[in-house]
Length: 433
Image (cartoon, rainbow, N blue to C red; front, side, top):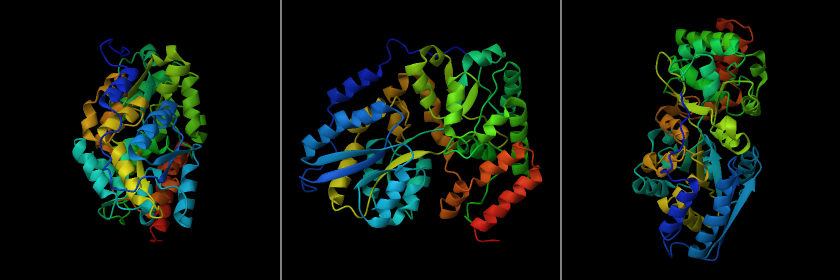
């Protein structure tokens, strides 16, 4: 497969910033008089892997908002991995920031500590062509929007076109079985596949849940209580994963966490992994020659279809905020296309927007290799799907029930044994043991 190059007629990221500035950052979406001026809002975020994203907020959006509103905005950045601790502390003590970033299903976990922002979300949908349905799994709780979604940090296949070509493969495999056949050839060439099977944060869930679903298997039914993991479909998925590990990877992946696959890919030890778009972003900056040979693809299809993990970023307002009206006005302003477009573009589409108007936004033309992240939203779900989000589905993720089921099979345990162990854990989590 030839590497897609940017056409000279396609706008660059700098061009998009210029267009956003010409359109006028600010000036729309902030209802004057709706909230008292002169307040200070604290907007808590975790530092982005894409530094330009935070810089755009700090240097462009914060000054624009402050000038228009008469308020002060403190953009509080936390180190990677520390956000949930701060959110939990704020929720428990009733003190801290006015607005916070969320990951995954946090709007459900902190439901009682977040205000209803349905009016903002519905207005953003009207202004931007409507919402992708899947995101509602993560932010709508008991019929109310408890967060306003921003973008999805998808987990897709990241692969080296040159290494695949050297093994006689010119396009990314469409099915899991085709990926297995390709992986056998790639391992013979000394460029194996490398998918995380350890207790990491996201790169394990990012491919193992979609693999499970693609075989027609699930942990729990949509009723949220009937455990159905012990099935022939689950057994088929486990057997496949064992073959994939044994014949296309090396034993090190059993202990990998999220940084390991990035490092192995960028050091050219593996030819393919499952990751966010950050690998290509880093390669463009630090390994430009390698970057030319990196491509993305949606996850392979299984017997029952193609699936992806839902990894949404969203924003919520705490019930303890003394400036709720101003906080709502800020989020409404931020979600207006004039502000939103520039912030999304600053991150090189690292955050795939859930608003349908952005499906055809020029930012996707900067580098079409990112488009699979946009397209994956149609088949993306939270871990635990098709059961609704709950504390039980969250506990299953936290205890690595699905990850360990696959990993232990790869380490040598029988299919029957790993499924039985996983079912026992689910029964305990759901209070059925």
